[in-house]
Image 1 (tube, rainbow, N blue to C red):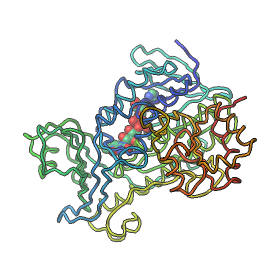
Image 2: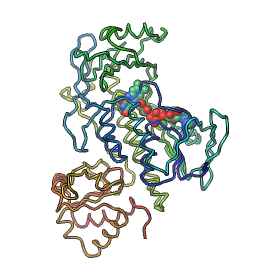
Image 3: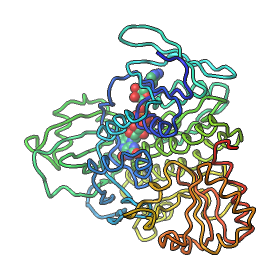
Image 4: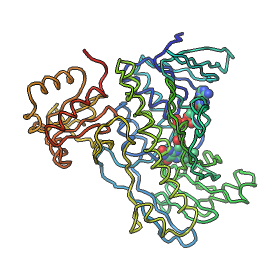
Length: 507
Ligand SMILES: Cc1cc2nc3c(=O)[nH]c(=O)nc-3n(C[C@H](O)[C@H](O)[C@H](O)COP(=O)(O)OP(=O)(O)OC[C@H]3O[C@@H](n4cnc5c(N)ncnc54)[C@H](O)[C@@H]3O)c2cc1C
């Protein structure tokens, strides 16, 4: 049994599993520890977005996940008493710029199963379940994790050059990182108990909407959502009175009675949660990191808690791999929390705004905050906080659309599939022609070290993208976020200068 790893991940939920898959792609020696032996049985995430699907595409599980997900119709907020429409957040039903539908509904255990099964592909990743991390000890060159094998009560010590705590809400790693901080957590004050219920219908019930319906009410708001197949989710804010009541099946069927009778469905599972809204202000201390619910918590009204954890994993994985492969630029690892905190904050504060709408039955003053002047809401797409990028413009820090390439093989190929888990540089024909001999030589050197270069000359969709963005070149990181953009030859030089930030050390 090995005791030394490049990365030890504590927690095999969706964040830890995504991180392990991405590290698996890079060949980094990774150990995954979890105290549990299977997926969490509680009712949790039911929605993810197209950007997250693109992470699954990178890992190689998107096709399997697409089979157990459905395209999300959207969300409608109605007055619970009158059913008058307060806010409409319909989601597009066409493939979007990421190459996937913008929004999906799914069953979290299906997704976790696919992420777990996919790890078989990576010999560099080892999984130890039934193992509870109990002590984390940092030294200069490594971090030691003391864990207990819960069945045998054996105590084992392993070390990692990096340790990432993906342990969810009660994170051991977050406590260690935050213990020296005066204000370790930014708390937004939204704390509310909700009863969450999953049912499986015996047969379709067309009266139940394909939309998620938020029944807004000052005392007893309710969420009703469809899942794949015959799955349905209801969430009930617990009133003062409901909080004292035993939560048992008769109580739950009484709550469900406006929509469903007991003979129409089986009650699959239920749980009471206190929804929180907070962000840890430190996600890194030397060789220690946190990601996912360990770093942030959000009420689920935007369906973005797990998505944020998957974005954390996508932001961190390639940076850890680069550091382990000799990229010693300190801003690579420093940029993780700088980029992610602002990004996740945008989602959490929007979820709280939606929570305020759900917790009452009027809306007018919230329209502006939610960027929905006409009562129609659009999805937010925040950019990364200022981190690795040098430039500041509208493209940098946003996720690059994913065009298809038509000339590289026998059939159209997604850009990400062509480039793999690597940075890419898209350049138009004029930009390529204007490269000096020296710049061309540098670009060739980067290309042989792993940079994926696509000349728009031979790829009409890449040409259209650069034209639409009014750019002559675009540099994208392995997590598909734009690091630099260029409109002329001097900006192109600045872009070339930034390529080493996203590359391992190379000769
Ligand atoms: C009702 C509800 C609805 C939601 N809906 C959505 C949604 O629609 N979309 C969305 O994106 N998100 C949603 N979420 C949020 C989402 O479920 C979570 O954000 C996500 O599961 C967090 O994943 P994680 O991997 O960070 O943590 P977790 O899934 O909590 O995993 C943590 C893992 O760490 C392990 N662990 C903890 N401590 C230790 C230790 N000391 N040693 C070893 N192992 C340890 C645990 O056993 C666990 O397996 C919802 C949440 C709730 C409650």
